[in-house]
Length: 163
Image (cartoon, rainbow, N blue to C red; front, side, top):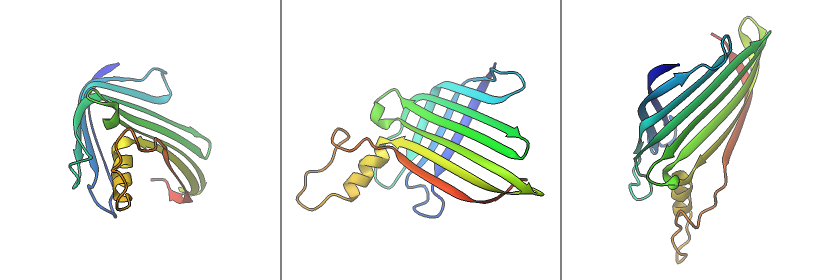
């Protein structure tokens, strides 16, 4: 167990760079509970989630707690990785967000392999911004209470290279 400082930045690169963008800065503890395994748990109760966006009506920065859990395992040519990054706002649960990414990669030849990745994400600020973008003329404006609480998901499959 160790005292740690964490900085994490997330944004799109190709489409709407930094709209929204998230920068987490915080301090807390890092724990590696299983000796010899690649499990890392970071808990930062003193964290600030800066949100950068052109739409200041929906997006808001806030203080809160940051939790990061990362697990990596290699079994022969199979690489397994799971990463959970969660921010819990002290101001409102509507300002909280989380992302969970799981990936499998199989090395076939000299670092070249095939891979699969599956991601889940929950972010009410992004859901509200999307609902506001898609509101029809004359319809009532959506609020945090009226939007769907659906989880975003994606998957990728392709060729990868291990450095």
